[in-house]
Image 1 (cartoon, rainbow, N blue to C red):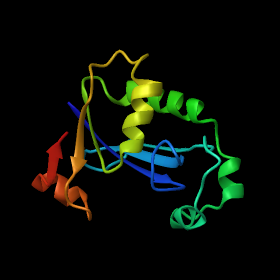
Image 2 (image 1 turned 60 degrees about the vertical axis):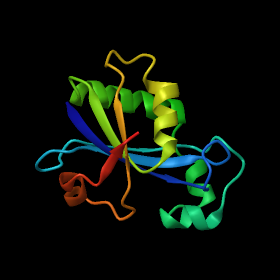
Image 3 (image 1 turned 180 degrees about the vertical axis):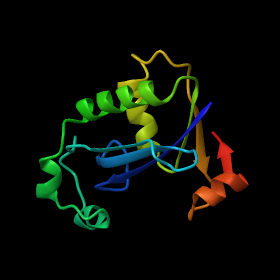
Length: 136
């Protein structure tokens, strides 16, 4: 089983009302060398400048980002290249789960992934190894 750590940045607090503007993923293994990063153009007209500032972006920046469906297709290809069995995703946000289920899983040949959400707000790879997670 491949362990995939994911994290996202958004332009507001609520998935569906606001947009995921970037996300990254890494296969959890020594070296952490298999990574993915995508920047997504917003799908909503709602946004909060302070939320964008956290990731170092502004509204003009994110409007130039890639089409979200294309980013998810690239993520799908990255997963197929790097995960040969059932993936186990670790994340703190509901956003990525929603995007993967809508845009990636239907064409994926993988089994249904396992999703794990962090209990500890200050998560680290050390926390992963110590098991500070709970299965959804």
